[in-house]
Length: 410
Image (cartoon, rainbow, N blue to C red; front, side, top):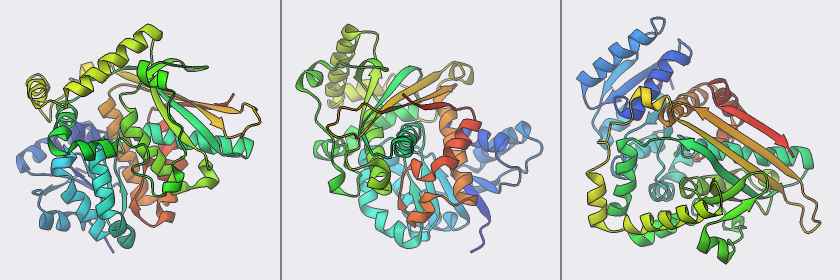
């Protein structure tokens, strides 16, 4: 089937969409055929003018005006191999685009971190996407591409070097200085308005997205760690609760269920933390984090918070965003059984710059791969998949784009 475009970027005039459009314009091959889509033709035309000034060698993207309605989106996605959508909150606006791609066999990428929504979409459309061959990859932004790729790479390294599976993999946010956009903050608050406590609790299960119940091999945290929020891991330091872990862990465990025991091993599981200066600050953050999670369940608190965040579509200025950074570190333990033989692999990612710039990079590079190359995702034949199913090709492209990576056996 001939397509008019290789990729359509839906939501291109929003905050994250603009980062993505700029990266496509300045970094992807000049013969990459793409379009920007949204509801306002005037805004799309203004964006095209801005993009034209960034790269005179690239033909301007096509413009597709579309409303978020099923029939219109069906016609839109039939024009392209890949759809990137940055239109959030996804639990309010995302289903119609994902459904259209699943039904037509169009590959799909988004940048959500909304696990309750991803779980709902997986239950509804995984089998449809498998039938049509649509590769659907949600959470392909800061949440959860770096975490998923790092864990996949470390499990691969353990398997290659030691001929063993991986046991516990400890993934951490080692250091960061970031600011959230209005869309991100509005999304987090909106989840509590949309989903029941039962649905939210289910999405907190680390294995809620796993294909195979037998993959649920994780161990419960010790009671004192649960109460105090403090753990010390050699090579990673003093650790506390991860703000990113609840979104990343279900995706990582889904990857494990997609790749299977031959790569990750029978006893693989991941735990996520943030580095703290010391045990006192770790405990203090834990208390504040738990209090914030409790407070956000109260509708008056959510209403008050909404008055003080960026409006959806807005975010930090480019100058402020350029000073951001994040570094992730992880240690994977080979599954050596009861021998006591310690075999470990270490990984590090560091990104200097805006997290939304990184999300633009992950979106664009994944779209290029889906449009032009074959990966493990293609071998799976479609369905709701994960960033790491794009494999080493994806990691290589992200490193070329500026994601500093280091992997080694300890």
